[in-house]
Figure 1: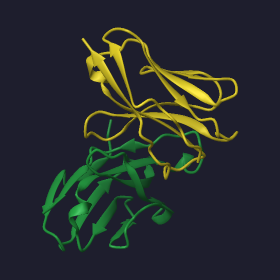
Figure 2: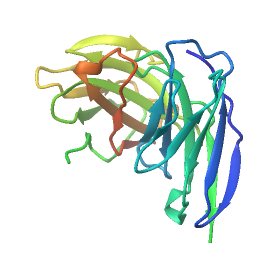
Figure 3: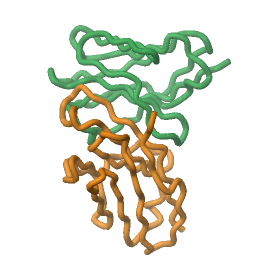
Figure 4: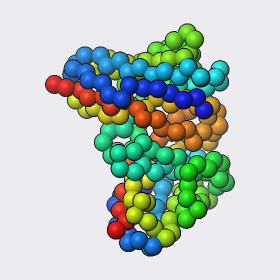
Length: 109
Length: 117
């Protein structure tokens, strides 16, 4: 499975968009990009996933670069409840994928 | 909507004791995954099951074993507990129609917090 690199932490003002980057330069053609988040000590929560097209759902948008070597998760209007660790994961299926260090997002009032 | 149910939510055991954690997947999900998350650590994959057969294995100690039953619930058995086994244990499930197909997601339970004293 491809490795991912994420910044260790980010701040965002409440109500503003949070843009969380992820580098996955060794991603292969059949690997999807998944995003999960974990709010303190709760079970990880699925957010969104995609292969090469941009995706949007009720929680977030996922922008994948054309070369697929990086992606950005966008929370359009961050709230205090979005404070969590965000994990970017790429894999070919199944979930033995290692959760990396993730990005700790702090949403501030 | 029904979610992944784990029991117990909290468990305290002494060193060298045994523990059994249970996981009930979302209805019609027949793939189950177990993760261990130590304090300040990221979730580490332990083992997974599909249709009652082990499908993938990660960093699961030999002291641990797991199985999936005919009703698709799963149990993680932990023996000769050590202080280092203190962690959050998460179970996740996903739908069989998408097993090993990339375009799916897993749903996690709220975890069991195991404390070994």
